[in-house]
Length: 76
Image 1: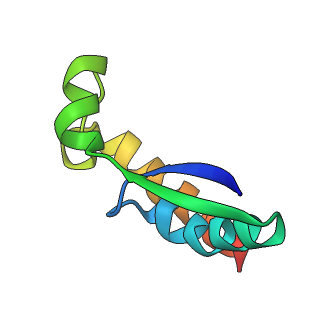
Image 2 (image 1 turned 120 degrees about the vertical axis):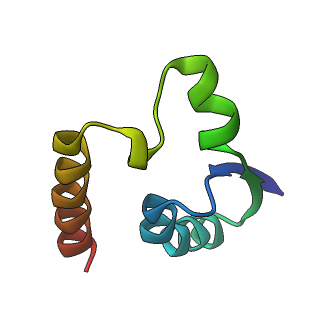
C-alpha cells in the first residue's frame, strides 16, 4: 500500500482547511495517510527566524486574517 506522509500542525487553520482533503486524496489513490504532527512554533520557528502569530508585526497579523478569509471562501 502507498503511504502519504502528512506533515501537519494540529492547531493551524491551514491544517483545518486541508485535513479532509488530505484524507480524500489518500482514499482516492488507495494510500494510507501517515500523520506527522510537528511543533512549528516551538521547534521550527526558533531555528528558522519565524515568529508565532502573536509576535508578528500588526500588518502581518492583519494580512494573515485576510488570507485566511480568502482561503476559507475559496475552499467553501
